[in-house]
Image (cartoon, rainbow, N blue to C red; front, side, top):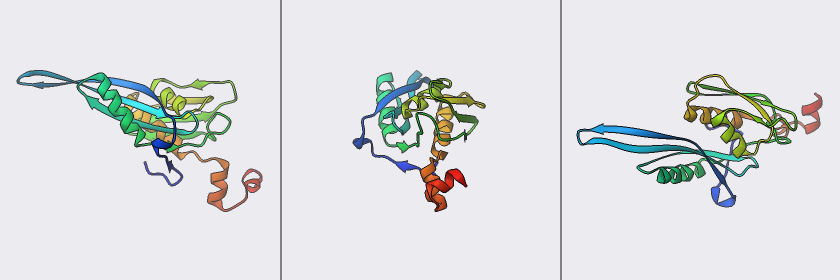
Length: 172
């Protein structure tokens, strides 16, 4: 998932809000009986362009969530947002999950399903049209959404990459 235009962020510098995406109870059957553990996938973000996801596993739900939050804080990335929406249409893929993100006009809201909605709201996107076209597995949907977001480039990044002025990006 290492993209050239992705900026890593340190969690100590910003105020983060966490969202629980999914909890899964896992059963391990041994000769002594069944052992239950929980896995929790969590998304954290500052609602202004920074987002990360994490997975926590433990014997109790609260511990699993806490571990997930700690893991998410280690995987923070900066995402470009233009006027509360994404800069351009983007396709993201991870394993069987396929995601399509499209910019939307002001007032549209976040039109997205469960796991995708958590990621988009955590990053601070207010208006977007999103479609999940493959697997609905929340782990893969979150990773596919982050893949699409990490491929996003704003006009300034495009101008810098091409070595031209901002005027030239829009006009020529």
